[in-house]
Amino acid sequence: MAYHFVEVLTGSERRRNYTPAEKVRIVEEAFHLGVILKDMARQLGVHESPLYRWRRLMRAVSPAGGLPTFVPVMV
Image 1 (cartoon, rainbow, N blue to C red):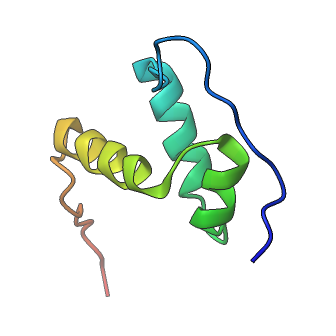
Image 2: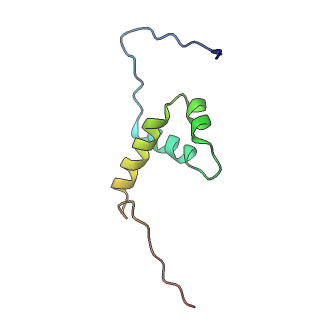
């Protein structure tokens, strides 16, 4: 396996802190239909696990609580 790039971390801060607005934007981009999450995460410079965690947290604070919404249907 060959590595294509090397990232050098300098300074005392090793983790990037994302604002809530950035997290929302990243999750919205990453979870569109047809998007391959691993590729999107690599493109955004984020690991996949925070994306899943952020999505779960956003569902927990959503008005519906992340539960599916039912719509009445007339047959």
